[in-house]
Image (cartoon, rainbow, N blue to C red; front, top):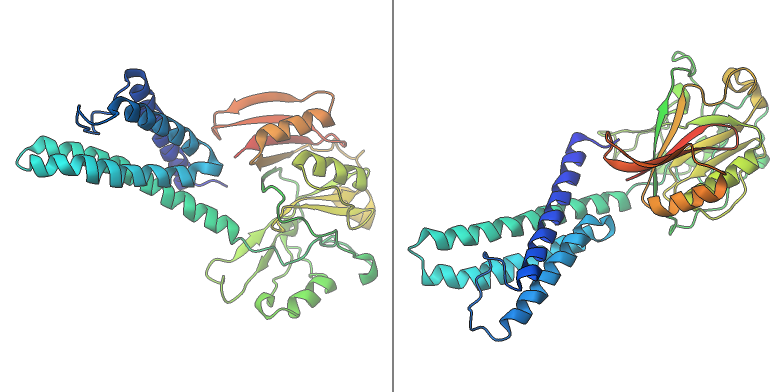
Length: 352
């Protein structure tokens, strides 16, 4: 989930980008430099340069607003304001009028803008690096049902094909109702998972599978910050069909689930997005029959994606109508829409 610090940072870089767009628009409208950028009136092609700078500020500010280019746009603005505006433009004024407060005040204002760009760049660069370093969960392509009982036949646990690393990144938040397995009940990891973990020294020490299938892996590197994962399992009538439906919704390459009764939709980094379980398989009390209760009661599948517009087009191709048309959510501050899947589950897609 997004923290208060994440929300504050997102607001900060949005405001910075809008401010730069406003300054650039003013420069273009008046055909002149920003008052904080002192350029001599007799400077060659001054008006042309003023339009070029205004266009640069407008485009760079817009680029800050787009997540994919925020880092580079912030770096460009930081370099421009630090080297060109503060050092070359205002540096000359400070040297010529070093005894006047106004010279330092103007330079300080431009330095603050450069510092703002540097802060946005540093924050976004760190976030991108953290996302790139996210470990693949257990290093497995597909897992067997964590609650499966009876004979455990390794030969039937064939994983799904490896996801293309170029797959777009999908983030998921699950709002889950009160129905869950008893907290005092735990489950042993499967033999296949244990075998793979024991074969990798850096992944030994898998904890027991507990409430709602959450698992914890403790390694020497992450013992101070143990990772937890939740596997949201929903009962479906036709696993292969539902598997294909969710892959289409997320824009993933079409593959087959690991089993006819069980499949997992995975992110490109191995994170489990959702698990599909055949109704009545393995005698799980809450997955016995869709007739026991309305599917989805007490459950909202809430996915956050980084390609909202494309996801909307894919969703319209999957269903006759949306349950909720695209609209702004005042709580998340992002656009979202909702639809129902094959089995009637309410699915909400939100922009990051």
